[in-house]
Amino acid sequence: MHKSLIRLGLVGVGKIAQDQHIPAIRGNPRFELVATASPHGSIEGIPAHADLAAMLAAPGGDAIDAVCLCTPPGVRAGLARMAIAAGRHVMLEKPPAASLSQVEALSRAARTAQISLMATWHSRETAAADAARAWLTGRQIAAVRIVWREDIRQWHPGQDWLLAAGGFGVFDPAINAFSLLTHILDGTLEVVAADLAVPANRVAPMEAKVTMLHDGQAPVTCDLSIAHPGTPQWDITIDTDAGTLRLSEGGHRLSIDDQPQTTDADGEYARLYARFAAMIDGGASEVDHRPLMLVADAMMVGHTRALPPFEF
Amino acid sequence: MHKSLIRLGLVGVGKIAQDQHIPAIRGNPRFELVATASPHGSIEGIPAHADLAAMLAAPGGDAIDAVCLCTPPGVRAGLARMAIAAGRHVMLEKPPAASLSQVEALSRAARTAQISLMATWHSRETAAADAARAWLTGRQIAAVRIVWREDIRQWHPGQDWLLAAGGFGVFDPAINAFSLLTHILDGTLEVVAADLAVPANRVAPMEAKVTMLHDGQAPVTCDLSIAHPGTPQWDITIDTDAGTLRLSEGGHRLSIDDQPQTTDADGEYARLYARFAAMIDGGASEVDHRPLMLVADAMMVGHTRALPPFEF
Image (cartoon, rainbow over all chains, first blue to last red; front, side, top):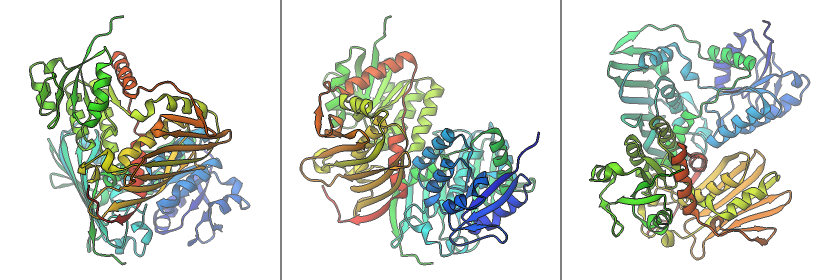
């Protein structure tokens, strides 16, 4: 069967687009990058526009089949709505929107418009995550510990929006841990308490401790920070009836009872684009709101305390 | 067909239980109130226990078919889980739990246990809300204004938990407005911004302005306060292509273009118990998480500012 070429417009040409999306798009023969839209960046040799509306209205805009949104989350839902209304398939960087009700509204709009909507969670797409999910299936979960600590100055230098209202703060990276955990574990995860530490001159938390329950029984503790200097720690440790699993380096390394496990090479964004093409072919969508729900719950039940003012 | 008697245990004997649940239970021949559990209150002539576990373990506890949870929301999910695990049908006062992930976990537990779970939203159960929903069907929505303002000292005197983490603050009453709005309007509601005002010595907001969009287009503005002295305002005004609908007095009065509409007498809790009995008979559940989702979203996207310290 002949599979048609998918002409893609990329909206938001920042670090994640440059580092991950563009190599993945160029590595997949199903996709052709035909335009970009960004107030800041552009890609050499690709027609660049100021925004999504201009990109769709430009000569050749009619031929764009799908768009990928790599903007900050605050504007993502409005852009997605515009693209869906224009009948284009949509891939969303994580998190899919600034609020859960936006995600629900986008899912409904996508169904009505009969386009494919893909909310991506790139941390799930590693070989180690696959192996962790397989190993955990059928095990009894006794306890989970997440440590997700990094330095905002290294990973998001100068990005004030991340600490503003709707910017997610420490949950911008921590939602990757939540996306992994909801992927590798069967059963329910529920937020029961949270401690949120917010710099006096910012709105979003830079540190958080979140307590959840797995299947109503096993404690899940989360130690989260973007004020952590030095080497980042991105570890999930799960005690089971058959030993302890550790997923480290943000989902890229797996060990069982401290024995490193060999896994295949990773291609997180290559997998995302391969699946996006298959979803477009099959008329499917993929929207999992659970990682964002855990963030919203932490914000809702959380006790907030003040940190000293933070400047980049 | 003979319908069996439903023997009910009531957990949490506070103001809402005394004012609303007990008259509704006594008014419905399908239910018999056989026990209560509360650290504070009791009902004359009904066996009283310290908590749910004691109630179920006491002589006669085996015969309890269903429980209704009227406790503060922070402990509701744990009690619901215990009741579901014991195979009892569960009615939840609003909000159904402190977090969305708890609601999702309870829904799943109820399906597994094959019991009926009912998350109630009493404000939806008025004749005026029925009439509003019917009138709005098929209309084009242009704008929505919610004003939900009351005095915490009048409606929740001394209830410090309401201003603590997980206590919801102004959203404890405002979730009633959200439950009404999600009920009477078709289409999507999505939170886009919020301003949250929190007393310096408390955690939960006492005032909030929330902006939503209906179906991605019509603005929805919410002016919410529990620091509003004097007469409460509980009004929803909806501009449409066929005139302006106003639902006032918390959903009890309906007007169209300022013309009061006659509606039947209300029996909010009588309706809830009648539907709970029908759900138990039919093996059904009813859990709508949308009002709580709008609260969580407001907390997640909201900009927080400080109010002077508040004491009751």
